[in-house]
Image (cartoon, rainbow, N blue to C red; front, side, top):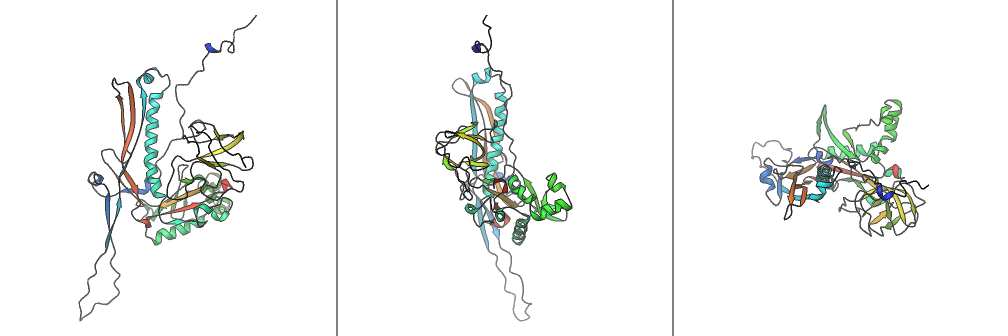
Length: 399
């Protein structure tokens, strides 16, 4: 006797969906902590096409005795200006009214989280891009494109912070007030922190004096720097030296957000190399690509590569067009060091320093669409190049 089961009656059985969506990692405001609002009346400043900040020189140090026969020659001060041009950002989601009425997941609620997260990340990217384009750069490898994960001299260590503190002190960079003086923040990726924590001097202290530095990752400061370790710190993916077994190919079809596989034009060396690859354009200059992402290679078959990425489901976080580069060249990790006046920011008070949510509101001839978005008017910039320094290093985690 034939028994009815889920196989031969498959059309009568449906998968059960959870009502809650799984979310990707939450974004944090990272580089904004190095920024200060310039001026006193932000509403007046933000109305202009640019904000002009005046600077005035110091007086020349007095070295002459006062003459009894001739008068003192008065000095004159020199002034100059720097400008910061406000810009704008805004994104939105739109769905049909019918979807909102019939959806049995919490899609309506999750839109608010998605919009809020997008606003936070998009605005902090303005600060991040400004912070990572300063003129003061420490290159252990002499340039970004030569930065090699296999070279110990190209990695972060405690000596790097001696160079940075000497530079910032010499340039009179203001710091954060702390007990006993001032301190600067050092914003870095966990990969850079890993090498600092395992550096010779630091590991020796951890082994013989304070084991928590090694066992509990409790290295929180080096000299005048307070270490801010975050996966959201800027990484120039695949911008360094080529891998010994180079993978340099492109997507042959679009990689869609949440995909766990990507299709590439060449599989050369895919079986020979180790850990990470970058999907996106290598950032060799001052143009940054915020949708670049780093993924972990798992396997491949016939040009289809299985990866683990940063997306909510372990796949891609963003959608990438056909022809986008896929490379295993060494990543270059930034360490941005500065104080509370390293970046300047301007914003329109009506939308606030972190933007404002718009909606939800009904749209369409018969209000059949529901729109939710955010907007921001403002910008970040470096007005004085002596207030921020950036190191660009490799990491042993990619060696």
